[in-house]
Image 1: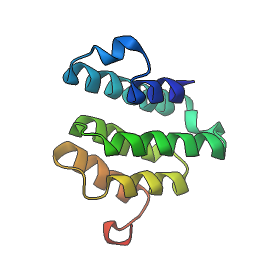
Image 2 (image 1 turned 30 degrees about the horizontal axis):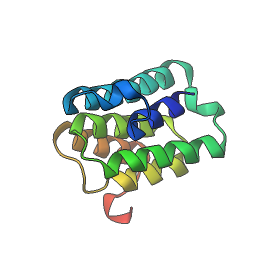
Image 3 (image 1 turned 90 degrees about the vertical axis):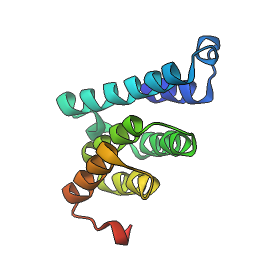
Image 4 (image 1 turned 60 degrees about the horizontal axis):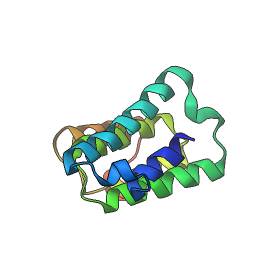
Length: 122
């Protein structure tokens, strides 16, 4: 359900989202990502996801990375990967490779270290 909400934000399916300023729109996407990350920290949210939901999450994240998004959103995506299954975490980290700066870059490198991955091998 949360993924459908996030995808609805990205596709701007709801009329109120189309009326948001660029900054408010970015904040709405970031808030949703942060909420998912928070829930996964406390409830092991990703442990019970099946492959189809992971694939849906990957495609939503791919859409996000194809947009002009702020680094806070990329940071949230990188942070979220440490709670995912490794195969999907790697796919998301591949999406973020070369697209992060500042705190997003720090989160990206932290995720690589968590999974014992080398940026050059992604």
